[in-house]
Length: 563
Image 1 (cartoon, rainbow, N blue to C red):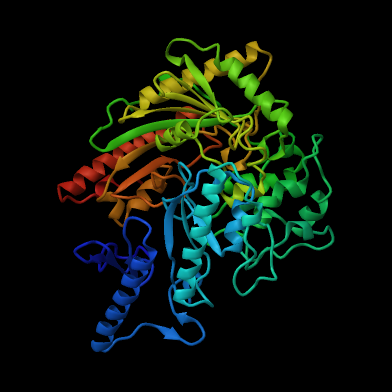
Image 2 (cartoon, rainbow, N blue to C red):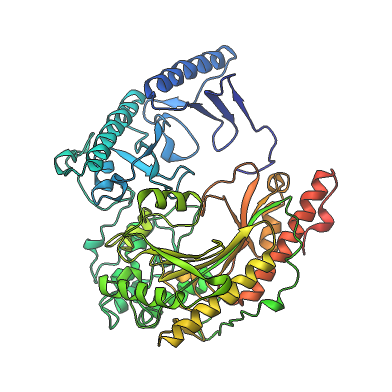
């Protein structure tokens, strides 16, 4: 899709910016009607009239849109065949989104949810992008009607919840042409779905449509060997692979597809997890030893990166408390124990690290929205990957956030891991952020040890976390950086790869960048120390800024591309 970028790409819009046409993005054209507020009827009118006028003009020039009776309008991705239509609204439903029936209601209304940052982003402050889930087999009018009727009901349900009323009678029956099918396997694509409950030891499932490291590594022999295995805490092999079985994944995005339920999982299910770890981390043998190094004085540079390009800097990691179940396998008792142990340790910190704990159980909606909006607090797990791993159990019990007075050192409790430890600040002083991260993390660990607790860690895997992708350091050191010229250059990806870096939008994993602003961070977690990974970031960002400046001057950058 990126060939010859940005040649022949562009955007057309009317004077009011309410009718737009993107040219040569993923399809030849993307036609968009949009406006503030909830007048979907007006937006749909403009869409239909404008689209028909565009088609009329194209026909006058001797061309036509691709269309046939079977598939409707023909587009690049099969998922968009038919109408290609996505009618959506950004709607605030802070109460309904936490209700156990939320996903069932959306499914029965033939609607889908995403964060307002785009596909696979999380919602913030209870604000979701709600749209039709179908494209093919329904007309444009039918799909827009699904959205209008569905969002009207969602708003009514939200109002009922605000009044403290029961909503059981408001849950709709399944809508559309497949009303006889009603499953509660939330977020799983219909096509290629494997029902978790249908797995049998003597029948290896068809995983040909799946794209994750678990299904790539799972063989019939491993499946047979591990099928009945459980750890001493009762976490089963089937629990470990559930998220990868139920979520086929995206053809271009390789997810992990499995989780650990406790420290023992990495030994009990090693025949599967070892090849998953080896593949996900680009080669990591079963006898390899991981190196931990939190001596921030070894970091070279990072204190003079240009703030004209770097908006903010952050270093984070996860840590797990030994002897307690990890989130996919936890119960109320263990979750509260994690909260108690960590909060007691944090209460011992002083000076720069003195702070306060805020429980989600007692936090007001206003405070939650503010912290989420400021990118300090995690939101409720809504991703199908997390729901399949049961990360949302007993929400929000036992969850919370602790931060120091300056909000530059934070600890999330009982999100995807027991803890997420974060150091952050505005500007480009990675050195200062990394110093605070290392000092604060070591102070937390020492306080835990004083109370008789310790982090999960071993010589082979480093720090043990829920997802195999975060083993080792668990560290992601990143910056939000503005680089509109380099990001449009054909060698952008090459620079990142050679400097051990990865990109994402500032809204999180799998989000698109806006205005040339990217979140750039280390690509590795395991096999390198914390100092090495942060050095990759510092050296890489320094080079990226040099290249961006050269491009601003109109110069050639070939001599700056790393070997």
